Length: 66
Image 1 (tube, rainbow, N blue to C red):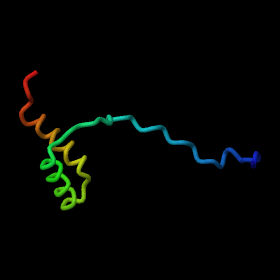
Image 2 (image 1 turned 120 degrees about the vertical axis):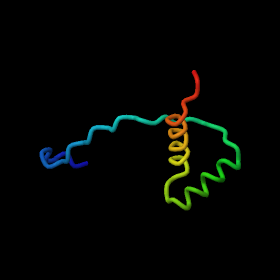
Image 3 (image 1 turned 135 degrees about the vertical axis):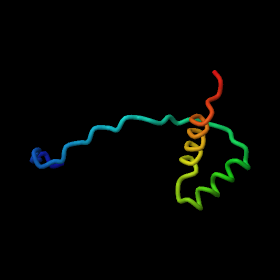
Image 4 (image 1 turned 180 degrees about the vertical axis):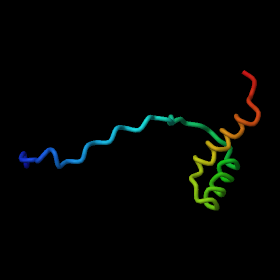
């Protein structure tokens, strides 16, 4: 192990980005998932990104009652 490191030449670590997403498990109808995967192939975006965008658009257009 090389212990003779020149510390000033090492690149500083970047700060960790703020966590903005949470991993969950969700059950979707096969047809729904198939549609989003198909859209994903056509658009080049990930299907999970498309699902998130669709949910976000739904919440912004007509919020559900509490």
